[in-house]
Image (cartoon, rainbow, N blue to C red; front, top):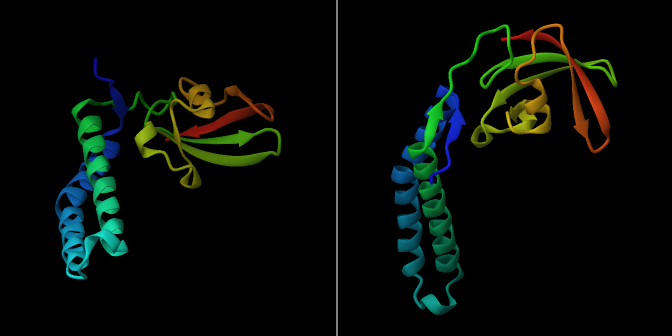
Length: 154
């Protein structure tokens, strides 16, 4: 049975864009690199050729992965701005240091912690999903329990 991948409409569009790029430009670029590397002669001792083949394998693996994810993708619509759900942007107060933090709840394929994009399956994401403005959620973390007060939901 295929795994279902929940994602936002924007997340699906981003993956489709990446797939189109890799399927077209990515493959053309690697084909050119292989052509140039072959021109250097003996392939058994040609590091440029080995590197290009390795890059080609990575691109093909990523294309296969993206095709599988997109075939099994289910776009989840936001529940509304009063409850945190997939696709919500949450501004919360982290109580341990009284710092305001912003998280966007996304599917695993869209995660970018440096940009505040966290998975709905992450400890913080799981705790935030379903919460409402004004509520306090507790997240079990290796450093201890973290408390967040929900300030706003977009």
